[in-house]
Length: 441
Image 1 (tube, rainbow, N blue to C red):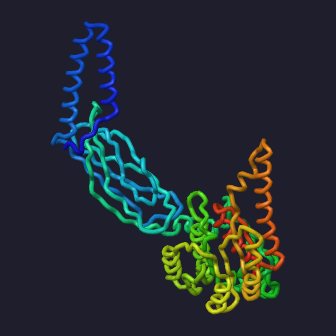
Image 2: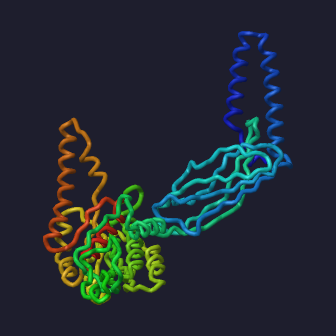
Image 3: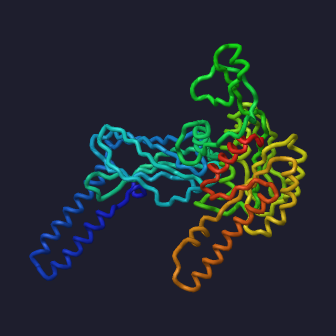
């Protein structure tokens, strides 16, 4: 019993008040008797409060509801259902034992639950690491309306749930990419250039059809306007290649660049498969990691998801010569390659540029690397001292160097995206849709 009994702040406040009154009673002797009576009453109330929270009538049940999987980098909702079968209201301080990966050490929820009722407590967690998360017991600190003492009630319920690359982002961008009238920020309307599409059928003209697609010969035979209908070219290979070397370990909003790339790879693979293209995956650092050949089978997305779930960062430099070798060996035919990596200097880019040019000769290569948002924020701050001006000038030179990298890649015919980590998925989907609409893949 003593191990589960706790005294509240209200109890210590009452004790401090009584002690203060005893001190005052040394000056006002008639007050001593009154304070002594108050002390006896306080002890009696405390005993009665303990009797209430340890009575046989206390019947509480708690159950945690978790999603089957948690999404990396997203806010996932957790629910706890608490049932009070007691005959009087209880004040509850709920402490859930969260997984150590979340690093939440002061999580608690306070609420009042009425007798013979059930209450649902909802909260959100944002996992920033992939892997298996263990939720421990549910701790209920019970107190009556008197509130001088608390009783800890432990509900032993352990739940394991895996954290996968963001399924929520995948679904969100799938809806945006296929909603042609969407006005939301992120998905651009791309103007189609010519007819780089496969012919599908001839159909009757309806208002809104492109008049440039009118088939005049068919119209003269049917004495009604007929138009050619085209569909996007299908079965193009789209490979996501993720650099998992130390250059991708830098965290932004507690999520590493590699994890941003993993979430985006899942998004773009899903959209490519929905558009009847073939999606594939390669990861590399000092050695080759996962290799999934591009395919459009129904099991392909699940295969990519499981491979991304198991990927680990490596603290070594990336071997681009090895990447070139695996692309020549694994990828057959011209493909779209989305390379997620990061360059912090022109020297780093110059070192791998010959390999990138070789890959771009065979495939359509898009190099995606990251803008340092913290340096950007620092470069835009107002400064007052000479030292701050010097530091800000260095930061602006760093940002300018990143822009020069994009220009250098474009100069050699390599598509490039310089993006904030938070905008990676949006910009990558836009680039894929743009290249597809231009008939480059």
